[in-house]
Length: 206
Figure 1 (cartoon, helix red, strand yellow):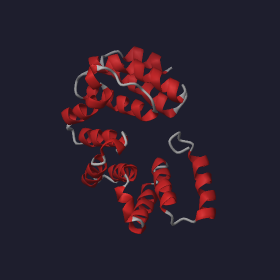
Figure 2 (cartoon, rainbow, N blue to C red):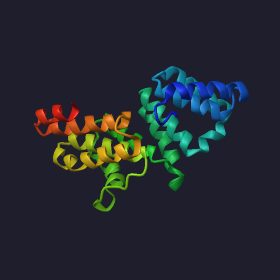
Figure 3 (cartoon, one colour):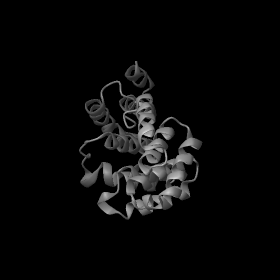
Figure 4 (cartoon, helix red, strand yellow):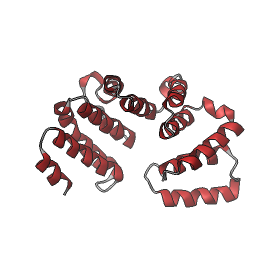
């Protein structure tokens, strides 16, 4: 529910879970932190994360928890703390979620380290020079961020080759009206604007 941005229903589900299992168990605190972050309630998200890690420090051995905690630190404008958690998550190898790639690239991009951001994403989005096989929404988000970085790095022509398949993949995975698909369409329009094609960008979004 949270991943699909069905936030009201997710909130109701967690409220019900709290009446059964209480509000101090690790799973509840982890999920409520993610939900509050999606709702842009950053202080509440941070409070839940900090409480979870105080009560259950062993959760720092979970790469998914580490990734989500790092993402929250990005929103708190604390990129160095986020990077520290990403390194711990990445140490888990194959168990490390793809989100860590997205977060690391976003931190590099935010610091105007565009070459680093591009290199991190290229390894995942274009392995062996071929566009990755889209299996889940995270794949779409990684490819979207890659095209954004390419545009910022003055490589809009390369980005143009990717945005169409990204929109198509998100439409199949998420549906045409899903927020991620709409963001992918906006990304495609941004590429067109970068290529000095404003009329095409406007037509695309109509």
